[in-house]
Each structure stands twice: as C-alpha cells, then as structure tokens.
Length: 101
Image 1 (cartoon, rainbow, N blue to C red):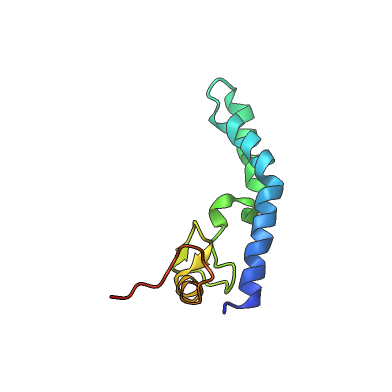
Image 2 (cartoon, rainbow, N blue to C red; image 1 turned 60 degrees about the horizontal axis):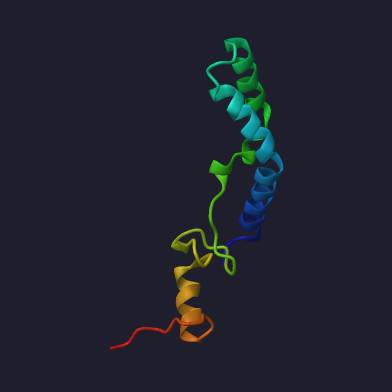
C-alpha cells in the first residue's frame, strides 16, 4: 500500500490538471500560432509559466486504484500487476483466469 500522502498528491494534481486544462490549451494555441505577433506569443508564454506547475498533465503519474502502487500499472484496468493477479485468482475479473498447465 502506497503512502496516503502520495495518493492524495496525485489526486490534487489530477484536480489541477482538470481545472486549468482549457486555459493551458488556449495559451498553447496562441504560442504555437505563427501568424500572431512575437510580443503576443511571448506574453502567452509568460502567462503559461505563471500557472501552477502541477496543472501540467505531464506531471500526472498513473497509480493503482486499489493500492496506490505506481509501478507495473495496467492502463486499461487501472490496476497494478499484483492486484490484477490477486483479483484474477479470486475470480473477481470477468473472463480472466489464472493460467496453469
């Protein structure tokens, strides 16, 4: 089980990313638009830099929904490999059975 503080930090980052997503997108569109004057694009760059760092989607880290484990994460199931195996062994995941031969 991951530390509660680390899981809470990721939840906080996810909230910030969602909150500032539209603002960041509009500023990035202005920055990448070559038809705009250089001063306007530079001003948009400065405004983008003023936003909280944790509002950037790059800073998000995938964690297991059940344990908070950051490594060996399956995106499709939002689980770590350990919980995936455990749930599959107990028959909690439909259509998935533990392999044996």
